[in-house]
Length: 231
Image (cartoon, rainbow, N blue to C red; front, side, top):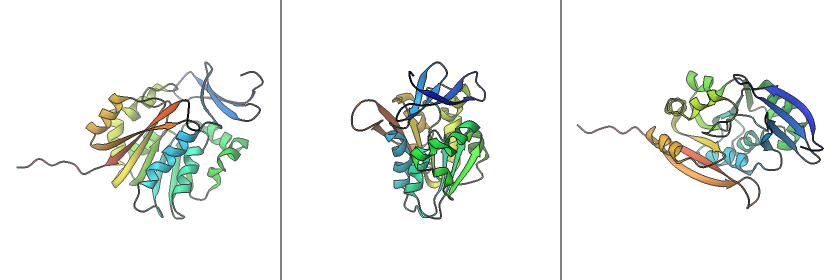
């Protein structure tokens, strides 16, 4: 991180770790304590795809209701807003208040300031709380929390990728909705877990930047009718 300027630091609730926001010559970077870079403003193609692809599956986007778990650098939120209509409502849940503030500052310029969009609703807290409440039937839920099923920043995130968490997400959807999950790597056990929870699953590999280098995994989990046994 030579010649990088630290712009902020934030504790991760429920963890002893922290996030740091840094600026290099051309980009912003979010680093978890220990030195691992979680994201930057140059490589965000998979975050764009996570927001865009589930919305493209909808038959009607004009008034779609979307829940995003994890604000990050705002690219997934921006992609969702670009894919839905003028009457849509997009709720983004972010656990760390400082991340929201970073996106309201200079960082937000890189994603087009999606927090300023009138369709955006911000929930500062754990997306799991909204899934457990299930008082809204969402058309799309997208979850870019931690590093995927193999979490790094907060052990409590594991619930989202458990069968109980997956079932809660399914119950928070309408009858034709779908969930998009982001992961740094493929995970066949998680794909099978989604299928056991009565989802039809598409697995997509997306380059982080351009058409070479690291690839990330997206799962699009489609709601499907419950199977009833014949008598």
